[in-house]
Amino acid sequence: MDLDRIWKNTQEELRVVMAPAVFQTFVSKTQLTTLKDQTATIACPNSYLVDINHKRYYDLFKNALDNQTKASIKIKFILQQPISSPSEDNDSLSPLLSYTAPPSSFSSNLHPQYIFDNLVVGNSNNYAYAAAQGIVNNPGLSYNPLFIWGGVGVGKTHLMQAVGHELLKKNPNFKVKYFPAETFGNELISALKSKRMNQFKNKYRQLDCILVDDIQFIAGKEYIQEEFFHTFNALHMAGKQVILTSDRKPDDIDQLKDRLVSRFLGGLTVDIQLPDYEMRLAIINQKAEKKGIAITSSASQFLAENLESNIRDIEGHLQQLYIQASTQKISPIDIDFVQTLINGTTASSSSKSNLTPRHLISVCAKHFNVKTGDLFGKSRQKDLVLARHVTAYLLLTETKLPLKQVGQLLGGRDHTSIMHARDKIHTDLSTNPQLKKLINQIKTSF
Ligand code: ADP
Ligand code: MG
Image (cartoon, rainbow, N blue to C red; front, side, top):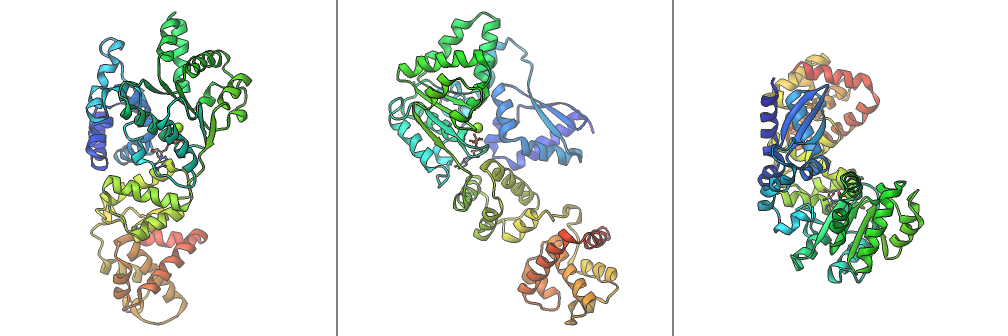
């Protein structure tokens, strides 16, 4: 298949799983430029999209590309070569503006979704949240700087940007700027090369609030630390708000100069931890609600119990779940669906969508060399019990029939005994390679 076709199909797939505005903003203007050695290069019209697509939509792009190419693809998002002069880069962002907040929010580099409304507050982040609210009410005065630290995907960037959005909402003329510390470093180096240091200094020192992400990046980089120290001081002394994030506490960042450590510790240091069960549940429900996806409460509880990870990972899993649910037209997402998916037993059902329960039962009977009637009977003979359990398991996973109906099909059994059969096979599968082989063999003969 040629590149254009793959890309067209990939985009169509993405269109189905993304909200229209999100698709329009983040995907519609991207282009697949190369695809070789299982690596796809996707060009984006500006660096903001490069960043966001990599950070937020990587899994979605990957899933769609994997589907189209039947391979496991790595993706590199790159900046499209500008056709006109680079100074016009900002113009290419205008479609974003029509979708996002007021124009000022663009120059702030704020992600439109990283707002307080989309942020669940729970045990792991309530302290950081309270500090953030304090800043919204009294920028520059309450906690300056605010230093937020924690592991990946716990919501540091989201929280700091939510403050930025809120400050802008209160005062659209407020000059808020979000940037990763790495960007600061890169800009500094290019300003040095092109002898535009004054311009660089002015750019940062005229701001009212800086949101500096992943400050640990500057560790060990003497010159960048030096310049950041001066920028920090200039702003701090003028009562401007500074918020920093890092994966560690200031005093745990190796090769960070003492004077920066002491500046960073001079305000308030808060951490964000991994979410607990309650918070995971709230996040799972909130994400589904925002996307307009119906999910039963037992399904979200099951997910909250099983997705013991950071929020970015949880989002990734939910995204997969939504894609599967939408391709299999499952709504609401229920516990059976979630269980089979999380347990990794979603045997590609699409090609077998016309598989009937009757056919499945007869294939199973043949494999076990028993009569179909025996599968419905009550005999506790060991081989027959196994055959019955496997049939029940396959009926559940391959035809997606609910427990109750599978029970009826298999001689009017109670749904709890079907559940038991499914759990038994599922547990045995992880320890018994022969059983796995057998089940795979049966599946290939459907
Ligand atoms: P970090 O900066 O700590 O690595 P991010 O702020 O990038 O984490 O968050 C990762 C993802 O999880 C983002 O998509 C973000 O919107 C989401 N997220 C983080 N915290 C929350 C929360 N408390 N409620 C809802 N979504 C959250
Ligand atoms: Mg971050």
